[in-house]
Length: 398
Image (cartoon, rainbow, N blue to C red):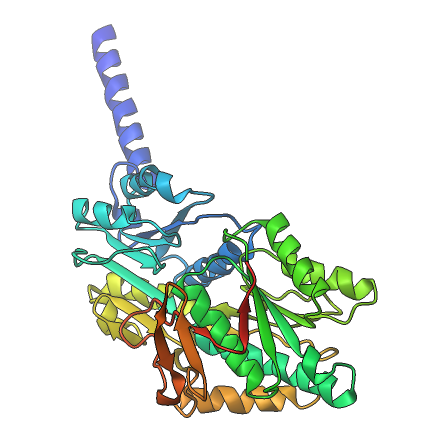
């Protein structure tokens, strides 16, 4: 009798445990059928504008496909140490990964895991030669936004020149840049061309930090540019330090304004921030996930310019944006001017890299380019390629 009771008890317990497992989804994947696991690998975290901007795309994705996807992420991942975090996401079931750092490790892992889709923001040093079909790169054509932000800065400089607040020989703007790669050179060239479309007297001083994210160094270089007389500071670095330097200078009675990157800087620089620009990663991320859900090729499903397994787009597809303008600081008429500029750019009426300029290759002075013939950026790749320093209007200081 005791044996029968024991057997019955065991059977009942087994049934209860099995039922619980079925209901909880641990025994079968039925309750999770159709759920796509999406992974993000970030070089930093939300405390830095660069990654905070990327996280906005992650959240837009979650809002778009609520209940249809499960998102996992790894933050503060060093590029050289990214293999293990990526493997962990794959082991957790992620079938599409978005990576925002400069490393070839994802390409290697893509060969090992052909069932996983790898999407990496294209960076200067990523080599995509021989990349497998499940590896993709993408980037916004940010030079367009930099040109338009230059127009905003140029309108402010024009106002200062016309009012006599700044003399023509002092029409100097500064640029805090991470390094001398084509991505950075292309960006600050587009910026000064935008400035000079309104204020042709302008010259630009560039100072490098040697790093994408170094708050103290960025602030130091911004302060040097301000002390040299630059009245507007723009940046291609990842923290808000240049904006803070401008605001501190303004508080001390110096007239200096700021153009930001990745996020609005008006919270930290309310009296000096003019405008900021950003790459909007959401269109690509959302449409790429939709492509994987539907079993389609990403480059066939995403709206943008296709370069093999690489994609880019600008204002026309919403991949780059000009953020809220500081109406208390911007010159009168700036919003109207910017609106017309963006519309003309969407229609292909503005060729950014053009004009009576000569560019010199900083690595080979014998290699020059005449911009009277024009140059089409991002024609063959999402990675910017313009790498010439314009004579007479751009001064590299370090």
